[in-house]
Image (cartoon, rainbow over all chains, first blue to last red; front, side):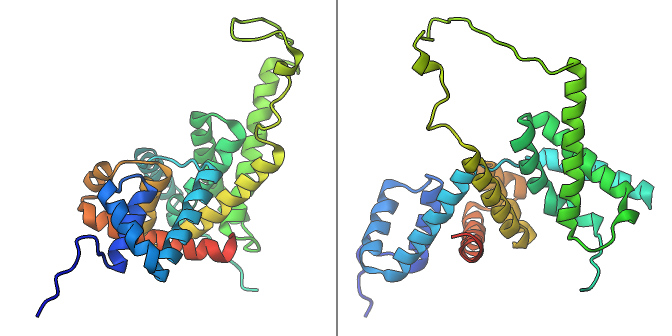
Length: 87
Length: 183
């Protein structure tokens, strides 16, 4: 017989997914509540949340800049042409 | 130690972000940084024969980029003719005449902070280079460029749930790598 699970109960994988979303401020309030309940009693979730937060903080602190996709594609095209000429 | 070889086909994918981040923190101008990175790749392509194989590709490219940045500053200084010190003392409405208000903010970025950020950026990009291409692209777009989920999904032709799985794998790998090299 199947046991009826509480709607607040989520698996470890779901908790990790919500934690990832939360790093980008894309987790809903209900998802955060679910994550919190799991966080309270699951050591694996706690470890993951801690590790994930550390990564987010490091990235924020480093103030990284990068080329956007179209800039990168332009550069790639021009470079390929130059490479062909060279060969 | 075996001699290293150059593989220009991968240069843009592997090093363009790192070189761009390195440049923009030094020239503070996005367009100029883009031009300098492009010049660096072209110059590297021309002088591939000079690569002895002692250093890594990345170190060699950075050495070329450093010279490009120095040239850029030399040129912009020679345009001015000579170094000049401007004392611009104008009182705007929001400026006070209190001397304390005009000195440098002690809580502003120090040289030490800049150095630490540089090193941290280097560590992050090194970890990013180790990710599979698709994971690296998604992680870069989502985390560094800050694009929203829908835009990335449209651009890469993937579903939102697929995107979150890729993000999860990338974050996991990045956190493990950073744990070894930085934290």
